Image (cartoon, one colour):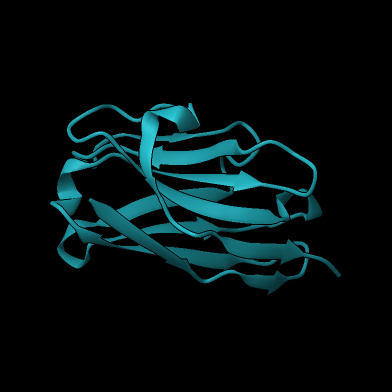
Length: 125
């Protein structure tokens, strides 16, 4: 079992930045691919970014590529999502998710077995 707890959400102005954190407890953190998903008001949950368990590969949705950066620190059991140049379309609840051990990240939320409770990000002037 892996437990994930997100933090770092809040209110930001358009063009601003936020950094989300996801702290994991439980089994070997380094063995799991990690991803961030988000769900805006009235929208389905969508893929944002993912990082492989070997840390060499990261993946982004087209809507955040060049603005968001996913990273992980296996020594701290923590994943991060640095979000720069935010816009109002980034407003959503952001979820951290862990996939199956030693597997490659995917864009499909059904491939992730463990989820955090979510953290709200609101971008507004």
